[in-house]
Length: 432
Image (cartoon, rainbow, N blue to C red; front, side, top):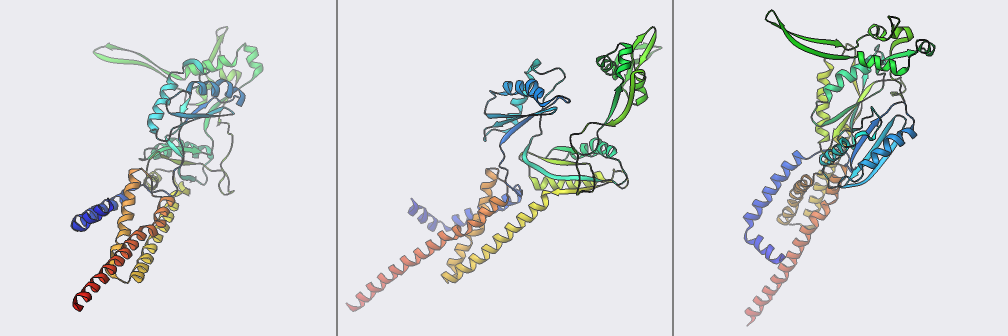
């Protein structure tokens, strides 16, 4: 088989050169379109189900949220195993799928099962799926450099302006906010006044929920003009909350301000984010979507951040604290330089040892063609160009030229033997 292949190649040298040129051009295109990252993504195919039920202990979360979800999520096709973690007010469930499972097919199966759980969970508890990112998807972290702006205003700016803008970047799965205070209206109730007016906390919650809503009416015509009736009841200030009526006692309304106080404050926090020991700060994390090109996504996020900066308040700017793009550039640049140096060194050694420029060139040409062809295979298997894959190519350069050197030396040996036989035959014929 090998002899026939070699014989065919020797008889059709132009066809072989044409195929090699096509492979090289295809390889160059593959290099330009290859996904670039600093580290290989070896994380498992997982779907995260997150459930929040604040104020409950880990044991209550385990018994009433985590355990029912785990038992109902088991049995999904192609699931290897299910992991769970319960903590104060939160439940995390990790569904690990087979390696060859499409991640979006897996997410659709999990969503399908979640929609059929029904009344298994306590009232008001709704599980949600995590972002479609991987365990190594945190590609960029940033904080807000906002001197003179309090943490509550910074978090509001992050949640209601910056986050929405950056989430629209192609390839970004989520912008996760951290730090600062999340503003909320808090009602501090006096227990003695509750007892005096014969009210409960449920009565207050029911009154606030009922009055923080918008109701639609009907349309009617009067004097050939159409009117649409609606009621706008969304609460927008502390005064509106204080004036809400909880009940009526002897034709006198009992309002929220009669039984407690209302204030604007921050949500309870389980931790803080400190930057370099200089104090608390607010920021976000750009999470890479599954299967995206990390280098391109980082560049898009940075370009969007420059656009978003124009709308920030005076003195507020972005401070990038972690950028995998720098690591990617340095890693890829280092490997590229190593490849070029190896190609030059190998070429010199081949020329010196063979001392025949035609044989040396035939062997040296194999190096760029083989490297280019390897990127075709990387793209075919959806493997990114990272430290591991490029280092493997660099280590394989010696193997690439070995077969060429062996074939050249073997050819020279057989030619020398054959030439010696011909010379003997010629000498024997002359003697006769």
